[in-house]
Image (cartoon, rainbow, N blue to C red; front, side, top):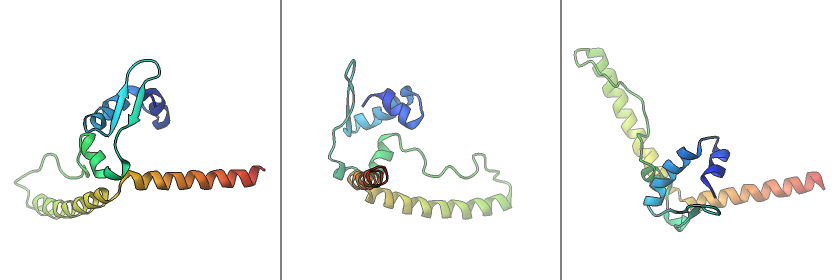
Length: 128
């Protein structure tokens, strides 16, 4: 599938797609072919790749971007609030990372296929 086609599906620029897919290619999850008839192809066994693997491959941005970027070390109230929020965020992030690591791309593919089949059978019954 081309970067242009993926960009249309996701409503984003093909350059953004290529930049994101480069991380997946470097991790060995996809391959790319340039030129006419080229595009992206899955190269890994989907059962061996988790959502956490994908997260890491695309640069692993912070899970939660909450909190103060410029803490005021002289403010006691801010210190107490930041400590409470940071502890909660660490716990939530650990849970989310564990869950992402437990979900394989094969599971997502099975869910997608099931929804596609259900949609096709519903369409067939309502249109025929």
